[in-house]
Every structure is written in structure tokens, then in C-alpha cells.
Image (cartoon, rainbow, N blue to C red; front, side, top):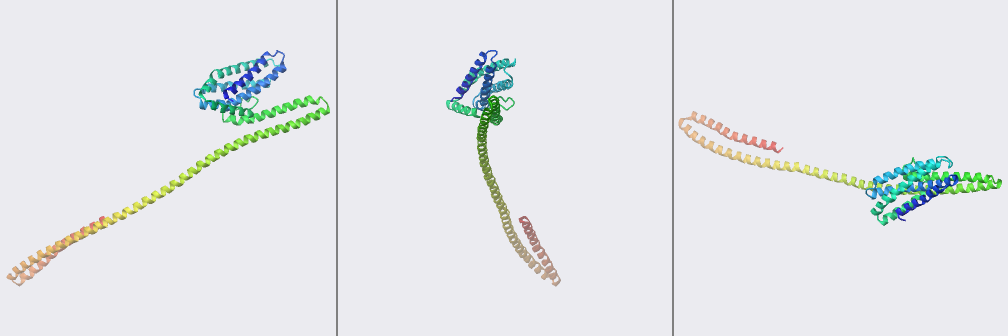
Amino acid sequence: MNAITLLKNDHRTVEKLFVRFEKAGDKAFVEKGELIGRIIEELSVHAAIEEQVFYPYIRLNVEGVEDDTLEALEEHHIVKWVLSELEHMDAEDERYTAKATVLIENVRHHVEEEEGGLFPRVAKALNDRQLDEMGARLDRAKENAPKRPHPRSPDTPPGNLVTGPAAALADLATETVKGLARSAIERVTGGEEAVVEAASDTVDTVTETAAKARRAVTKTATKATRAAGDRAETAGKKAKKASRAATRTPSQATSKVSTTAKRASKKPSTTAKRASKKASTTAKRVSKKASTTAKRVSKKATTKASATKRTATKKGPGATRKASAATRSSTAKRVTRPAKKAARAVKRTARAAR
């Protein structure tokens, strides 16, 4: 069923009860009490399904309804307090009818705002499929909705999704106990057989109530288990993904470090080889240059020595010995200096290579 149609049908049902209450006589206390009991049940269920399904859905999917839904929640809150007060009042109380009248006026105002403003905007914003799906969810929510007002309970998700079914079970237990008490009192007056019959009926009713409670709890637990399973599965997928990412990251880091280390290790080796080669080449060049220089100096010294010797020969034996000694000394100096210079150059090149 379309969600808007379902909620409007609830409004029509409650309005019929309002009209009957207003038409009841001033002394029709029993009828008024029964009507208020039905009004309490209808409004409690209607408010619960709107708060659990309708309002959260339209706040997420329809633009411009935020303020309207918040105002509607406050109106629900006021109505629940009035319902809870009427629930514990006697129909003959002098303020009973007055309080019920205030309740009726508040609910009619709320219905007028919803059907005149909120519902048309929701119907325009959502397509038929969305409205039908929401209508099905509203209808299912009625099965576990509380039948009594609980103004202190949460009225928005996720709080009301948890407390709603629990409140419904509590309401069921309360109504069962009240019904059993009334039945026992009425039948006790019929004698011993009536008492036995009432006790038997009581056992059957308690058994049936317990079975309903077990089914409701099982259903709620199953939903919670499925939801927990879905969350666990999602968490497991995320954990696996994170694990794979974590595994890849160290592997990539290790590979990168290894490559960097290889490159770093290779670079000094290459540099050392290049430096060693350069030093060797430089040493060869210096050695060759020193050898060439030494040969030139030696040749020049030899030529000079020959000339000196010839001159000394002409002067005599003493001059010849002095000339020979001077020639050897001069030759040694000229040969030694370039050699030492070449040796120092080789040492500097070797240090640079290290």
C-alpha cells in the first residue's frame, strides 16, 4: 500500500473515534473510557511507525521537510504526554473530558498540517515505487509497535528502533495481566466451576502470550543477528583489503631499499674504478714525462761535461778532476729534481683517487 494512503487511513480511523467520543453523553463514562482506550492504542501505533520509518526516510530523501518533521516530532511528544495522563485517569474525573478535548484538538491540528503541506510535498518528491516500499515498511512496523504511550522513550533512530519492540512487549504483558485479572474477578462470582474454568483459561492465555513474546524476541534477535553478520562481513572485507595493502607496502618498501642499496653500492665501486684508472693514467703520464726530462737533462749534462773536460784537459790534471766532480754534481741535481717532482705528482693523484 502507498505510504501516504496508509497514514491517511490511520487518520480517518482516529477521527471516527474522536467523533464518537464527542457525541457520547456527559454521563457515558464507560463508553468514553473504552473510546479513549482505543484512541490511545491507535495513536501510539501511528506515532511509532511515523517516527521509526516515515520521518527518517523523508528527512533523507525529500528536500525542505526538515523543519516540518522536527515540529511533528514535538507535536507527537505533547500528544504522548496527554495520552499517558488519560491512561491513568478515571472516566468520571472532572478533567477527563476536558483533557480528551485538548488531545483531539492537538491531533486534528497535526493531521491538518501533515495532509495539507507535508504529504503533498512527499508525494511529489518520491515515485510510486518508493512510496509503495515505504508503505510496506510502515505496515510491517505496526506488528512490533507499542500500543501505549511512552513519552520518555527516544523518538528518532536508532534509539526508537531498539526501545520500540521492547515497549511493545511490555505493553502486551500489561494488557494480558489486566485482562486476566478482570476475567478472574468476573468468573469467581460464578462458583467453584467458574473459578476452575477461569484458571484454565488463564493458563492457556499465559501460554499463548509467552509464545507470542518468544516469537517476537526471536524475530528481533534474528534481525539483530543478521545485521551484526552483515556488519562483521563488511568489517572482514575491509580488514582483508587493509591486510593486502599492508603486505604490499612492506614488500614494495623492501624492494625499493634493496634497489637503492645496490645503486649506492655500485656507485662507489664505479667511482673508485674511475679514480684508480685516472690515477694510473696520470702516473704513467708523469712517469713518462719525468723519464723524458731526465734523458734530456742527462744528454745536456753529458754534452756540457764533455766540453768542460776538454777545456780542463788543456789546463792540466787538477782542473780536470774539479771539472769532473762539478759535472757529476750538476748532473745529479738536474736529474733528481724532475724525478722528485714526478714522484710528488703521483702521490697527490693517488690521494685524490682514495
